[in-house]
Length: 241
Ligand SMILES: [Zn+2]
Image 1 (cartoon, helix red, strand yellow):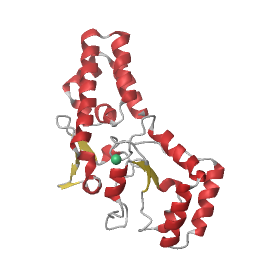
Image 2 (tube, rainbow, N blue to C red):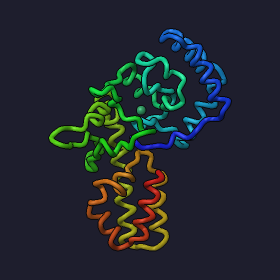
Image 3 (cartoon, protein in one colour):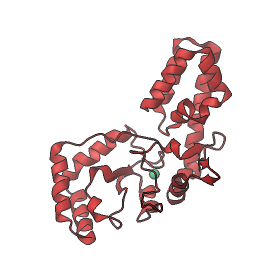
């Protein structure tokens, strides 16, 4: 899971969503209207905007691994049909994450969502990365596990499927190798190779190493102390990633 900027959609597309929402006066009508909308060419603008937000390889916004193909309603239509046509409620996801989430939408005692919406929340606020296994786990705070981290991993269990953790491990390994090259050879080529790893990092692991606990690993401390300019560039790119 990684934080992304949602961006905006053209005024005409917003008007279309507004019109459809007005026609959706019940859960059943909202679902019918949504199915009609998705089959129509008018939904293309919205789908294209979601695609451009997630990047060229179209990775799922929840698991970051499989290819996205569906629009997920972050707040499901079954829970609140008045959000069926809200741009801010659309997430571009893979079929597996979409199927697992379905109507599941746990809330905290105050009624706030417990699943992480990566367009609003930085997942690293609630999750930690085990760089050895590639597994994500909920943070442990004040004698308890982070409720959002826990609920997210419970509902979207594919985030920790082996194929996904292997992908995360591969990205971690590539960072280690790129940093070894900087520490051994320094020079612009090694710096550029590290920058490229951040640009190609579709799992958001750069944020873990640049801005979170991963920054305390020996390699990253060495990088920060020996090549502060390279470190600053790494952090700046990770913030953008
Ligand atoms: Zn997914």
